[in-house]
Structures are given as C-alpha cells and as structure tokens.
Image 1 (cartoon, helix red, strand yellow):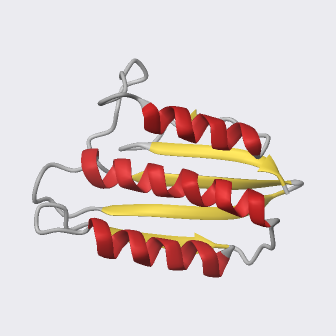
Image 2 (image 1 turned 120 degrees about the vertical axis):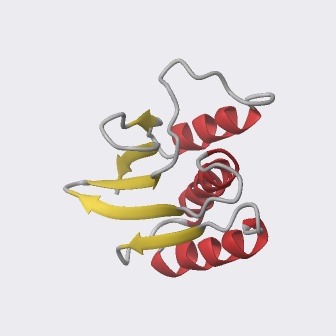
Length: 132
C-alpha cells in the first residue's frame, strides 16, 4: 500500500496542482499488504478526498498541504486524509451533486468501514478505520 498510495498521490498532485491550487500532498503509509479489491476501494476513497481538499480547503492561490496517512492501529488499519484549510461544518451540504460523498461511503462500506470527520483539528480531517 505504501508504493500504491505514494504513486497515486504523485499522479493526483501532478494532475490537480495549478497556479490557483499550488497544494502539495504528503504521504505517510506503513508498508501493508492488502487484497487488490480492498486496495482499489482505498484508492478511490483517497482520490475523492484529496480532490475535494484541492478544490475546497484553501482559498484560490493559497498554498496548502493535504496529508494522507495509513497506519496500523491494533487489529485495524486507519486511513486519514487531512488539510489545514478553511474546514467544513458538521452540517455542510455536499457541493454539487454529492456523488463523491456517495462513492466514498460505498467504498468505505466495501472495506467494512465508515467515514468519520474528526472535528478536533484545524481544517478538515476524514478518518476511516477498518479490519486489517
């Protein structure tokens, strides 16, 4: 997963980074092996969450960092995608059709997890814990 998510982050940064969105993606992933179907679900989740952070976390032209982490937590794996941007309220409605949130929710369910927002941090932090 470390190689897969690092490569995915490089591809996302090169395709999403613009002069108006000069953000960086930092990846910290423990070396974990995972079945292909679960890895694909995780990749879809990371892609959607990182894309949303690039689009909405920071004001136009402001630099920012999006952090992707995957670590063992006992018998679970914990994935987090976070930024230090403007944040979002608990009552925030999806921008656009909300299809991205539905996709993330479906992919989370496929790995026996659910999407949780950690409101204790500055910006937005999304966390998923799932069986290793």
